Length: 280
Image 1: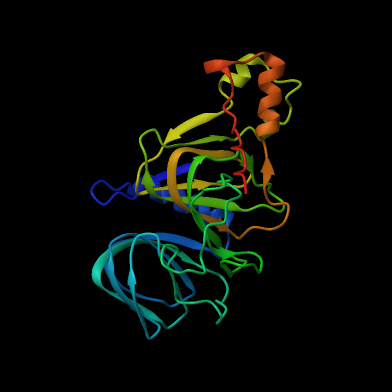
Image 2: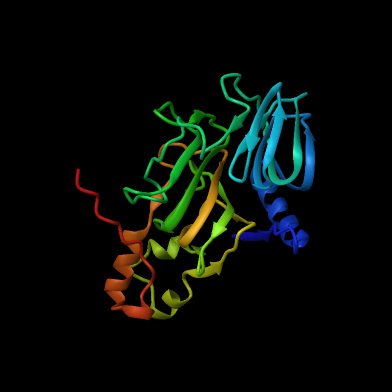
């Protein structure tokens, strides 16, 4: 897992370069970079632009609209995005054309088509989870199979990983983080799945906890277990997009390890606890 700080005051150019290099190596044809304190973007290729600082009015592809943190712009080659106030954004260059049916600006907190859809990394009935770009036709979100994203607050998300063969890499663009917010992760999924042979000593170092803050970009390559906790509001960006079978849950395996080794309290491996479904 790679974490880079995009905080305007501090920045983390070395961390972002490591993240960028790892992402490009694993996703040929894609690129990711950080635009800081800009008010114009001229697209020479297909771009997905994730605003994470700033607010005002944006003009793109002959359209004008308000913009704020959490919004996403989709630009086609030859299009220009211009704003009346500076902004920061994370940009993805895409190795494919954008369907004409997709809007230029996606506003998860303002478009009534983008309603809450609990599930995945936020399964509570009252979860804030807005699906913007998705892999399948449905009641909410727009279809883009080469890059998906949903904006979600993760208080106690599921432990899971995305397999190498049919999975995808994920990036969390953190746009708000409550005290104690963190991402739990492990690159030892093989040992999590081998609960019958895991030792107590191995279990102690199996899962690592990384604190995250507003403005962080977290890159989770496929094959790594991950789980966000304690109030992480983020755009969850999947490249090259979700496919059926691309998410494997791990909480049951972690529970088996705790039971077999008699781990309890502070010694136990952290496990997601599903909230009961609200009565209808």
